[in-house]
Image (cartoon, rainbow, N blue to C red):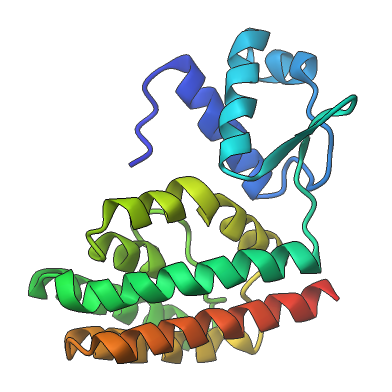
Length: 214
């Protein structure tokens, strides 16, 4: 999904990852001059990357201030997760109808590999992309508008909250159990239950992260 093609794409992806993973701090100002030196590209390339990051909702521009990384706040988290709960609930509902048996089997295998990590006491942190449980279900919805709203729209900001505030701790094993029940509902083609379980799962995640923020 993230095959960098041009220098501009590579710069965009590198800068995005630096922001999501906290190497560039939340709330900090973005200097085109500094970034063009750091990434060894022109300021025009940096400007384009910043514009793209703005449409991912992880960078904002303010008059007389310029571009800065969004700050993580309890209110921002609540608003983001309200949208996420609704959209991903819909994705789970559609996935229960539209995923192939093979895709569901792959999702089960992915969950088994997570179980081995949880059992080994690893923190239940999933990297974005193909190994991510939520990613598979969103793709499994087979609704391109929904996929775009989540992946191109809010997902990088969701990851930013998750990565920087972490999924380790008591939430780890319960999150795994919730995933297991969601997969079972999808396997049973129970769209209503899959939606309800996913919505509840995201609500619990929000409560957990909110607790860390306060």
